[in-house]
Image (cartoon, rainbow, N blue to C red; front, side, top):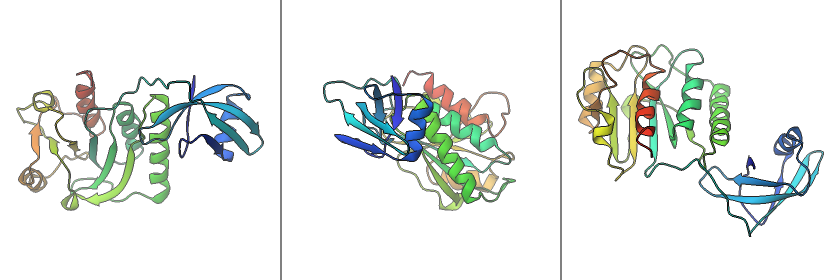
Length: 231
């Protein structure tokens, strides 16, 4: 069954031009059923009743149960990642969405070569997250948040800091009692003062293994280790 994001799940859902074009590309016709989701956790089955140039109409199928393989983690995971140069952030956002994050907080850090991100690039990252959530059958679309200086970062629950030379492993510290924030640095890593700052705020340093990973690889290795636990 095709999946489609809607702004709100309701008995009747009228789609705009962009969503209608998507249905037309898929060559869907009135009478066909779709699985709809709002990107905030709700999903349902709907029937396409009208489709025309510029608009389409869906009606909720109250007798059908939505089935999603993209289960969410027991507690939300935030990936706090330093700005990366080039198009590396797009790859991280796409894969992190598939691996289950609920928020992506961009960071301005001391060693990052990228110091800012344009409005259009932020829009593109959010679109990539939306597309990846639909493809991976997520019920939640991760929110990609505007960059903040590392010193202004706060988090709820537990913070885990990817830092070379640490002894603890992420799987040793998972308990799913509180939300989880994963902190990953730039190409040059976090500075010593940044590590001290984060640890002073309660972040726990964890290892990513014996090898030095690229800045775009490290957060995905971390998320992959969590996903491999089966959550």
